[in-house]
Image (cartoon, rainbow, N blue to C red; front, side, top):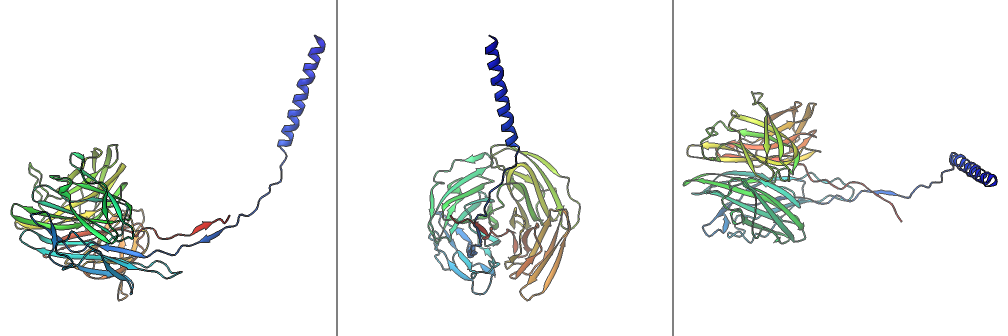
Length: 463
């Protein structure tokens, strides 16, 4: 028994000595062997810069077909040598008589930075059932965009244009939301828009009798630029037209710079819904409800309402009246705990008639850009600075003349710009921008969105 105990003790001591030796070896700093991995940095050639102009306004006929009746005026802010290529428009019964959707293309030479490109268009309507003024920026294609505008209520017409300037056919899925939630829309999936083609669809054919639609446009294959033409007839009196581009994508912060409340804007809210009253349209596209805080900044330094705090149900389009805002221009900021999309609509009354404008949310400017101001009366540039520091923005005209605009921290300013002119905007990183038009000729607005990301250096590791 004693011998057995001794062997056990000896074994234990041996294990302990071995473990101690292993521990000691583990504490020895071993040499590190490393080698530099071959690599190189490659900057891809910047792709062509393209902007899609949606083309002439359309008049919907009794049989639901649509045709153009006049040509838009197009303003270019692009380098010499830029090309303009018309798309086919098989749904326009007027053919190419008044022009077609057009893509503006500017190429960069090897080793050069991508060119600064912008374009905008505007057009007036003076028909028995369609009047007003509509201006819009010519935009970039996208595989996922949101249109927060329009109506298919009685006397309201909304025409969705999907333009594909790419080399591949686009397969499109549309999603519709309204005041009662997401809408089952037969035929809204698998729509094909061929390469080089622009198609037009009546929103009422997918989502009839909806007062406050929001439309999501998703594509596979080619990409499209989506716009929405919204017109109003109240009784037998036309009440304006607007051409709305996509708003900023879903985010927990949205900014609508330069929302104009005209001095003639209707302010009385009755017991029934009235789309002549200015309103903020919101949608929570996810599954969870949102808590949204809305703040206002007056571009004229006037009194603004206290912040608004709303609980917004998911998947249901809400409209919040802006009747508490005095005449003037305001930047509206929204902060939410879940992503939202938003836009605002206001009306300029003129007797029994009038015109209206849609103001989309814009993303912050992230680099120097070209600015195209469409032709129109009372054109103004609205700038909002959400940062904690003042920002000095410089506008350079085509003749080289510079105009400085100081944008205070957390505030907005407005400055006149010349209709039909082109500018280079510099020093505006972090600022949100919008162009508005207000005059005897009508009322309209469009957001200034930063360009899509360009080519950036890529690190390559050869095998």
